[in-house]
Image 1 (tube, rainbow, N blue to C red):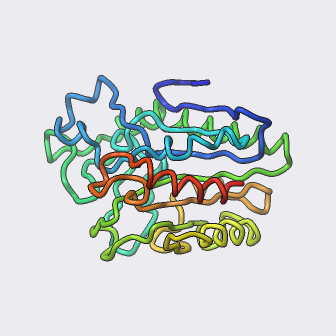
Image 2 (cartoon, rainbow, N blue to C red):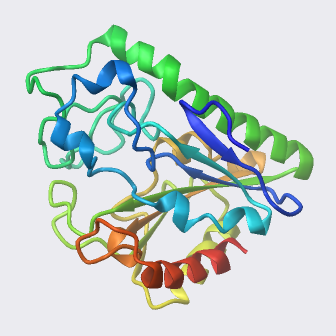
Length: 263
């Protein structure tokens, strides 16, 4: 089932539902027709900050009873994992692209006019048109699952190039589990996820160098039986060496770890 094709897609479970929602907010590659002309054509032909194929990587989830929500629009239109008021997520000097980015992670301009800033009224329009529907739907699914089961887990899925030196000097770990330093999920859920991820050949870190974006921070309410975890991963683990195409063998190995963890 698809819904609100301009904002998100919802994929319902193929077996009996379980109280888990998988969210993929950065897999979108679309640019609205009214905005396309403003962007640098070369940049948007291959939007590099996309979490490429993460929706495909997790497409086993409905067969486990898990509901999925995935983004349609590029994060360069509006970033669904940023604070809606534009508050920064980190204050350690790394480059943080904004709610409506004007540069990529390396500082390269995204628009034809490199001096462009996205005006407040345009940010507000995009927030209403593209950001709000995704978050409304996410909140609605979480509420439905929680009313059915009395508890719910949101698993927020991300990927990043092995090296992004404007964010982190070294090579990223293979897998980075984020729970906002324990604020977004209960200790037993965190321990289960972390320990299962570690039972693999991948390097795994916890809350470093990412601890969870806006989605994890906003929806993780363990005292209300609503858990949220973010999993960031290096793209090399499921893509080719250039991190441009999906690698079926690498992805297959990663999918086994993800399936085991979500199970």
